[in-house]
Image (cartoon, rainbow, N blue to C red):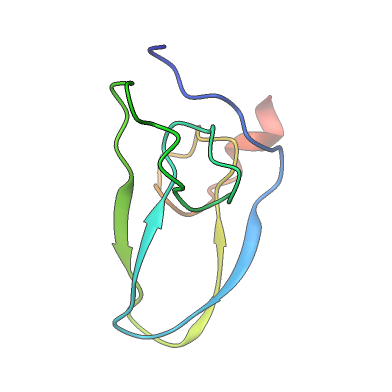
Length: 79
């Protein structure tokens, strides 16, 4: 498994809290998208830690093709 599984074709909106860390799934196998549930065990993938800079709504990528990890950049539109 060298490429991430496409977990979805649209981002997931999440209300985040300032200074809180979130662990984004990079492998695409988590059942708790967009967050890691440990499904990457035994693969070369590791979750990505992202810390919110403010209380706000953000859109986490689920296609795993974004260039702005972990946030959506619209890459799913090209799938």
